[in-house]
Amino acid sequence: MFDASVIISAHNASKTLGAQLDALCKQETDKHLEVIVVDDRSTDSTAKTARSRAAKIRSTIGGRLDVISASPDGPHGPSAARNAGAERASSDKLLFCDADDIVPPNWAETLIAALDRHPFVVGPLNPFIDDPEKSDIPQLPNFQVWNNLCPTGASANMAIDAGLFHFLDGFDTRLPIAEDIDLCVRAHLVGWDVAPTDCAIAYRSRKTYWQQVRQSIGWAGYDALLRAGYRDLIVASGGRGVRLSDLTSDLVKTVVNPKRWPTNVPDLKVWAQQVVIKAERIRVVLDYWARHGAQG
Image: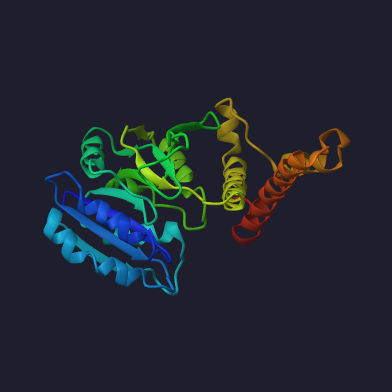
């Protein structure tokens, strides 16, 4: 029996996964760790990269590396991959990290100890671009009250009791983004708010401005979807939920109101980004409702 199961969702992660597995080999703990890498339909050498660290994990921390493949016929994406890893896990403590980040030496020990006090915990993120030891980007707290409803955190640095995770039916496989926020909200609804730890991981940020914009657009779209889905709860808590009509009105005002039009090139870039983000919010909500129903 392992003290904790570390679950990593990996899609075409051969260039970064090795560094994360090497970081797990440096864990300063006497706990027995099971590391499960879920290869989510990769077309590169992700699985080979993972298996190449099996002996090292065994010799350095006495752990076991298990590499499994996501179902070729079922749901795919980070949510489905993490759920598959959780099903495979043999421990009652589930630790989640990402294939392109780097955990510190005290990561497993800190999160395992935190789970002894609380069934659901998250930690902060230290963004970096090239060198995880040299981050000049402000730390992301990874513990924020979402829309005045409940605290949330990111799955890149998350741990949860296996019983609670399975009671919640894991991550929602219909959500490719913001699935971690959704899990925190559903835990809140059954009486378990996520709790913070101070153990920060090195979080790989997007390198270029446009990659960061693309990521922001994705987050904005699915955040709007969740705010629409949980609207009544958010409003009851004093937050701001959204209707599709709210999203549409906001986009129209930005486009047709001359007072919001940019007057120079830098402002044009910001304005264009806002237009794209607001349009993406509408697209995500409509697409989700078309596939799963407005109440899905």
